[in-house]
Length: 280
Image 1 (spheres, rainbow, N blue to C red):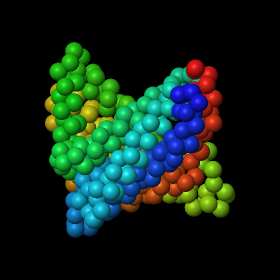
Image 2 (cartoon, rainbow, N blue to C red; image 1 turned 180 degrees about the horizontal axis):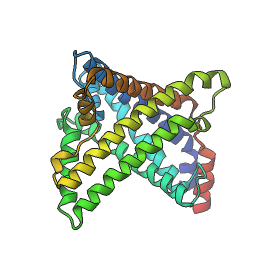
Image 3 (tube, rainbow, N blue to C red; image 1 turned 90 degrees about the horizontal axis):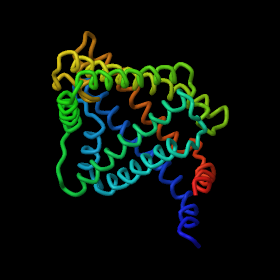
Image 4 (spheres, one colour; image 1 turned 120 degrees about the vertical axis):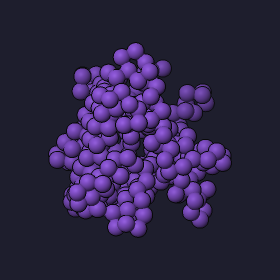
């Protein structure tokens, strides 16, 4: 058996990793949503995705759970990159298709970063609940120091807001249904959960994108922020506990939807196999 054939035979393992990845992403957002819900009632404080990994690590059997989550996040990142490079979903090379494939790459990079963060936690290299915010400030400061830095930061903000709009459209149209292989009765249960989850995540992305636009306008990296800052911002608004509670429930729903995706998502390993053969 040639090395290529061995790699093709492992595509089922890649599918398994992708499904584990959806489940891992779901677990992370379930934790984020839970902490945000309890923060709305004043018994806790919000956390972001990195903070969720820290919380997972600090629980009983945390090392085992975090190791599985890291593996899943890496598998999810791998699958997203394969979707972009191999075009297994047949989105094509039209402007819209290229934007979708670019989104796959961004998602892959983000979740690969979370996997690396989890591995660092397992290796005892620390990590705190505010690491995500510190990272956002650091690379925003780096962008601002580049030629046309304010334009670059503004472009990041615009891209995040564009993602927020895409999430809102997906929530409205429930277009995620075509990605799932579930019977009609099951879909009736899944659909409201997915819609609520994407709507809440879209709202959070809109807030995060606005932070980067403000950072670009004021040329101040401290104005940028991520998920944690967005949740804290919502908490500080009029009727903040109610607003945060609704968004938190939505993020929890997105986590539940991701777990559902682990079971019902269409993952076309055969298409990936054909693409690899074609490339060779």
